[in-house]
Length: 254
Length: 221
Ligand SMILES: Nc1ncnc2c1ncn2[C@@H]1O[C@H](COP(=O)(O)OP(=O)(O)OP(=O)(O)O)[C@@H](O)[C@H]1O
Ligand SMILES: [Mg+2]
Image (tube, rainbow over all chains, first blue to last red; front, top):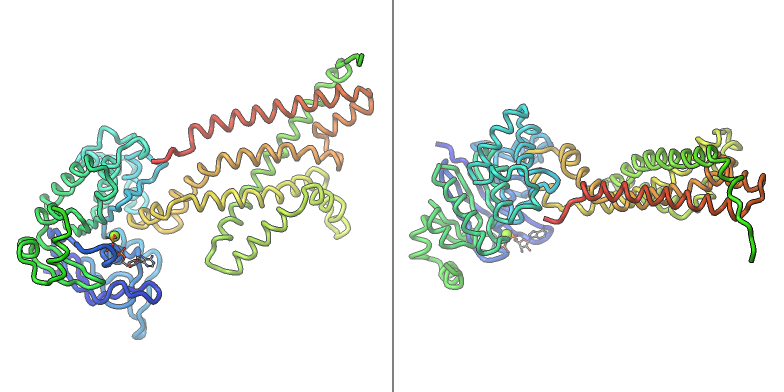
């Protein structure tokens, strides 16, 4: 079966600085993959390459078997047009550390915007679907609230509904709980966990080691722009092979 | 001092004074509308990828911001006919005030654009919106809300600047005040009444804009 995400020899530079130095990994349908690693190792950059928020310089990213971002024209790698980029971005759902809800819209409208303007759904149908997902993340009662009237945890749950309502092939989470007050972390992790249990394909960048261990089918450890080790959570957390990962786990809190 | 105030000859002329105020408000409204549209274009140009467009925008802003409004008014009204383009006095004044407003509104909108966090643009990209739709549904609505207080200040300034239209005989409040002044010689009374009218109007505008701001400006999340 084709994997939902396939990354092959991915390289990314910011000017002179090479941040991704050849990344290979795959995510199968229904799989939950956590990416861990020290600050600056390139986790966010990798995630942003998966939905084309960053351009990359070499290698391929395939989502559902489709190579994204570039095509070959007379042997040259050419960035695809804006409309195509937009279409390919909608194949993935992104949840940001800072929530990034649209502040001038209600929770409901945050979710329906993409449904009506990108998916072309009629408004009543979009509202029905948005309500379903808001209910799913426990935010239906506050669908008419503005982001400024919601706690961080509530905002993040709306952001999850906004992304998942677009029925992406894979959900990407970039430290979805790092900006939250400690007492708000649990509700968001619970939401993510229940989506995982329902079979949603996910890639999570996280510093929550215990969570990564519990929900993931696979853990990817990044070190300085490379994948230093990957495998099932039991093996990585209990028997890390590389000294780097051993050291990293010692300094991480569970 | 035993000056005897006599407002009667001035208050008799209330229809003129009111029509003067009305015209002033209209001139300010039309000018800020045109100036805002132009200013929005200039603001986007000032952040365009093309270097050529950017310098055009900055040239536009710096020329108009460094010219006294009266000079623009006189230049257009007396200068342009020499170049074969004569406009009637009201049109000519509206053009002058709109150009002037465009530079200030461009600055307001530039600030407003900068105040839209990049993360919101990325959130729009992530759900598959094209850049035009991101502008329309995310950037512009937030920018307008953030720009509202500055917009209000500019509108009040423009309204006060309409008094300069008197210099080219546009019949707004200052023009009529001067006319009544020369007919009645009640100097103090005329200018007291005119001042009061300007103050009341500006204050009313402020109140309306505050109410709008209260409803529209976004609290920090
Ligand atoms: N827009 C950018 N321009 C230049 N350098 C960047 C940019 N974004 C990231 N970098 C650099 O790329 C490297 C990887 O950054 P990235 O944000 O992907 O790390 P990370 O693993 O997500 O770290 P953290 O755990 O702190 O979030 C860092 O050295 C960072 O300074
Ligand atoms: Mg990061």
